[in-house]
Length: 218
Length: 196
Image (cartoon, rainbow over all chains, first blue to last red; front, side):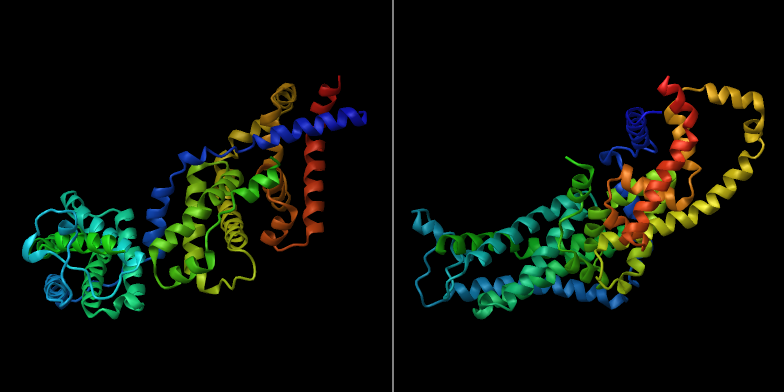
């Protein structure tokens, strides 16, 4: 066999070799199904929390409401004239629950964070309606929890009112993140408890208001 | 794009030391990120080595379970991808020994015709190169077959293969050369037909 024929034969062999056990398209891989099995074996669920932990979580949700209320009350009593966004654009004041600008300027990170926290908590009822938060939701809550902790260690938390708000939000976000570890029945109960606490204290409107105020002042 | 370039481009760009630290702290989301970054290549390799979707899936799962369970042993001397592909090769090689033994038992009777001269003639007349090549690759010694699959089919460089298999690059090259020679020899009669 000549060299040329040898080379052509090798080329043909190489082409045929690539067809050997050709894997399916990457988009068709059962990545989620495989992960479920891996997760179950490599990340065994933590032991069930003791019964009193349930009560601690309820208390945490209530603390959030109290914290938000305290925050609104304190910033509302600042000596600095309380100029709200709505007043600035000529609309009537929103009453007792309007949130004035804090004494210290708020940096863009904090402002953005408040908006994102509000967005996440607004999405909670949708999650609750389908019985469980999904992975991206939990992931987002996890990221916000990380940001909350970073902010607690930053200059943003120098304002006591802001510090209280961040601490209370940290508790709620921990609860949300913990939801992924709950069994279906408990998860639904936990979601309802968080939702009740948020509703009773008008947490989301206040958080939104605070976020927009900070954004306007920025 | 060369195959090597393809292999490098599919290597995930994530902050792996940070992800690994988070996984070690019990963060399953970080585990998922690490998995997302490496699972497609691990699956592809397992599929090439086994030729069976179910087995590839099972071995991919085993690979990651072992990797996460032994993650504390990963010192970061080599890339995480090298480490996890080494686990893949070990998992597949160990499991396939059992699978092959089972298959041999099951096919002992049905393959008796391969020894029959009349059937051998039929086989020689079979022009399907792919099918014959597939059988020739299956018949290669495991070390040659793995090297051939990683280099020719999955585009790993000799350096990568050497790291994964824990051999010198020279050894890797000579194994590949031996694999090609054996394939050529196994298909020599086809080459003659091709020549004519």
